[in-house]
Image (cartoon, rainbow, N blue to C red; front, side):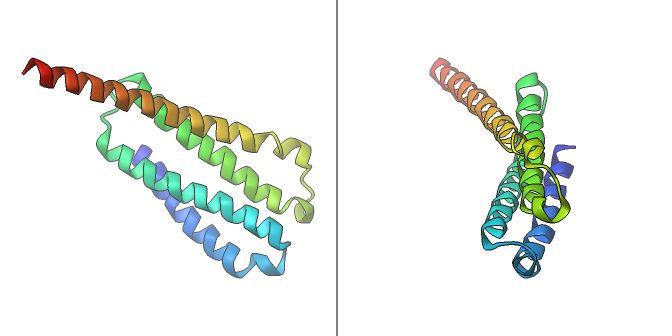
Length: 134
């Protein structure tokens, strides 16, 4: 599931990035295009991270699972809210609804990365202790 999510995010970021580069400039303002590109960039970064994490983690404990789940959820909320905000004037979506979703997505991504920092620091610490015992 984690590798599949990374693959889907990678695919979508390429499609949406191409759409943004070629079609959006005729439809929305340059500022909105730049915002859209931030969503695409973050989606690609996290697609690559999910692919790597899907291969290196064994997902036997809650920290690993929750870290990756938070990254998946956060990326979705963050990037898709930015995409919708970029089109908010064209499709009449109230920004009052979408505005708070972007930072919530960011908070999920930060939480996922913080869990990874905790997990890997504990892993490195345990590995260092093991090396000292040998």
